Length: 269
Ligand SMILES: Nc1ncnc2c1ncn2[C@@H]1O[C@H](COP(=O)(O)OP(=O)(O)OP(=O)(O)O)[C@@H](O)[C@H]1O
Ligand SMILES: [Mg+2]
Image (cartoon, rainbow, N blue to C red; front, side, top):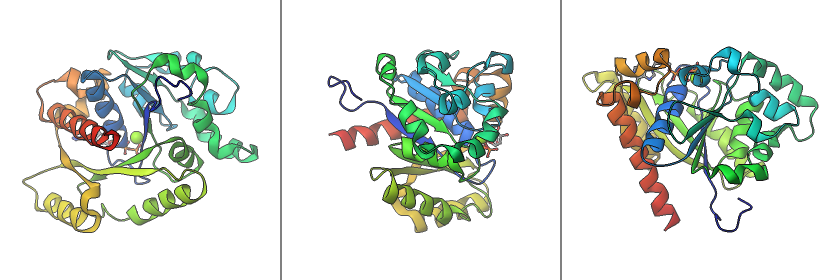
C-alpha cells in the first residue's frame, strides 16, 4: 500500500459470521483457490484457533512453527509466517490452538484491535504483490474478529441455507457498524453468500427469499450448493477446484470468484 505504483494494494476481506459451521472456512479456502485459478495472488490468513483453513490447505500441525499468534503477539516478520500452499499463487498464514489465548493476552496490549491491521501493512508485504487477502474468522465476535474487521476493506458473510440462518445477523451487522464508526470507516459489507444451498429443499428457498427480502442487493447472486465433494476436499488437503474440478461445488466457487472480481472492477472504474 505504501508503494505508489500499486496504489490500490490487496483487497482484504474478512470471512465472518459468529454462527458456527456456516461455511466460513470452506468459503475462505475455495473462494481463494478460485481467485488464484483466475490468476490472482491470494493470501489466506487463518484467524481461527481451530486451524481448519490450515488443515484444509495441507499445512500439518508440526509445520505450523510460526502462526497468526506470533504475527499478532510477537515482533516477527511477515515473511517468516507466510507459507506456500499446493495451489499456485496462494499463500497461507496458519493458525494453531495457541490463538485461543490471544483474545485474553491481547487485552493488555494498547494496540490490541489494530495488531492485524498493522501486521498486514508491514512494508515486506509489498513484495508479495497480493491481489486478495482473505481472513478466515472464528465463530465469535471477539477481539480476533474485530482485528480482522479493522484490517479489512470488507466483510463477506456466509449464510447457511438452514432454519435460524438470519438469526444473529443483526448482531454481526451491529459489530460491522461499530467498527466502521470507531476504527475503520471504509469497511463495507462485501456480500452475503448462501452456502449449503439445496434447490430441491423448500427451506433453502425460504431462507433465500428471507435473505433477499431483508438484505436486498447485499445477497450475492451466486449460491453455493450443498455438495459432497466440497466436504470431502479438506481431508485430501485440497480446495474443491483441485480435488474435483468439474463438481458443482467447484463451479459455484468459480462463479463466486467471478462475481466478486467483476464487482471490484466496477468499484475501481
Ligand atoms: N457447500 C457445501 N457442501 C457440503 N458441505 C459443506 C459445504 N460447505 C461447508 N460444508 C461442510 O459444513 C461443515 C462446516 O463448514 P465450515 O467448517 O466451512 O464452517 P465454518 O463456518 O468455518 O465453521 P466454524 O464456525 O466451526 O469455523 C464442514 O464439515 C464442511 O465440510
Ligand atoms: Mg471455520
